[in-house]
Length: 570
Ligand code: SRM
Ligand code: SF4
Image (cartoon, rainbow, N blue to C red; front, side, top):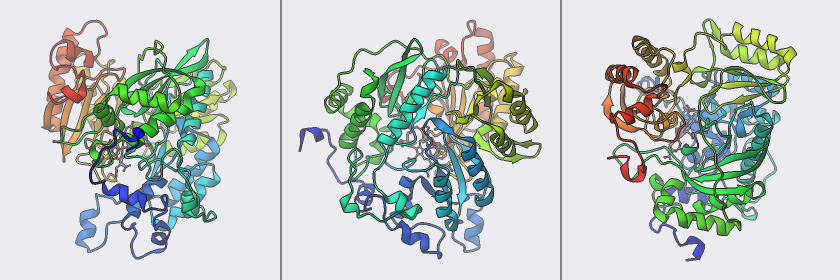
């Protein structure tokens, strides 16, 4: 065994490894499946391989039983997830995705995700190539937004420090491109590109078997931790001096998913490796990724992510290997502080004199509702907007770079279409849910469809205790995979079964503490009962401006999670 592979896990490889290895660099027989109109779905390995091209096969779970009764196959379709580093999209691109969603998706919506991009839900097989070609013409792709690769790279969407944001966003784009698969498969299958012999191709960074598991990267600009660094494998914390980006602190090994009943899985915060100069960024990104590529667990996918590799090999060994591979020594980390995670709604002026409007989009679901034509409103804004749009990691949308003369027209459109409602409470703005039912095949309980009513209930409890202007970072995920990042919330619900959730409390507002389970497998009524009691105590016993998460720890209601690999299940 080479020294580089000294921590490789031995044993029978997971079947995904065979699948990737036999795929001819992600081609499989996807093109044949596209011609097969007997089924709306993908067969065998192609079901997994399309993920590397940014698509997941799904069916609407609300109608699954009915179709089975009628002896029909589930209504197979795909969800597509685009690649948009830092969530930046231009108005002309917005109009393209707006039209595609209306004309060719089953749900008609654009869904903003917790990773600063959008998803189309419900695209049928005959429209899949058209979708990729339409996006391609508009300059958008969906390469590597799913599968065992580096996913869409996030970047803080705080528009105020515009110059640092621009520099950081450039790095997010460069990292995303540097770590992309190099295979021509996407172009061949979806864009009718020229065929290339896969044996002549190479994957110099990802390797021909790609990564052991998904890999997530962010750039964060303190004091705003909107991207939730501790959910990610690799994070670059922007360090600026005199308004110029000078380098990054590097944090490695965060992740939030777990499996009910399997204590070898747990959410974990990222470790601080130290500071690097800007010109080392791509080398470090490739070195962290390739160390995880070689040392990550390819035998057991449940323990395959970087967070488990760090636990198994030791943080110092992993860090030393990254230094060796990149030819860079980490310097001592520079000081920084996170103070918040929420988006700043409404208008702010950037240092370049441009104006930026953050719109609250509940659950990130952009659709026309009765009396609230969010989708039409965004399209109308796109028609006149001369800056860009930025999707936030909290599922909201920023209309960025607006000249003073345009402000009034954009605001009038936002108000007309219900995109700028003064009545939205702080609690609603601080609440988030994953997609869950009906499209997510892994959902155990409702999340997106449950959130609006649950927030109304919490608003009532806060008002009852005279706390209506306060809020709790409240997040719901339909299963323990953690897509709504409940494991970094002050109150996090994790779906356990229909109408049942594990109820976690004790995270902080900065996203630096994992909450702990307080009650297991309980209903909405029980959750609201506990919240009523806890919020009542918080209202009476809190120190000035003490947050809910900090209060429940200080009051001894729950013990803090300090070292999750060892104490999360205590
Ligand atoms: Fe996720 C799988 C939706 C962010 C951890 N996630 C899924 C799938 C694709 C279900 C599936 O595998 O078939 C969900 C599709 C639902 C649907 O119908 O759209 C899904 N995840 C989402 C999104 C859309 C949630 C949202 O409401 O915005 C987010 C899309 C992000 C993006 O644009 O790339 C999303 N997923 C996350 C996050 C949060 C984050 O990254 O900041 C996490 C937790 C962080 C982490 O990775 O630890 C997350 N998703 C997972 C996992 C568990 C991975 C693991 O480590 O075990 C799965 C399941 C899996 O990979 O096996 C999963
Ligand atoms: Fe689906 Fe679970 Fe992710 Fe929610 S947390 S979108 S239910 S995989």
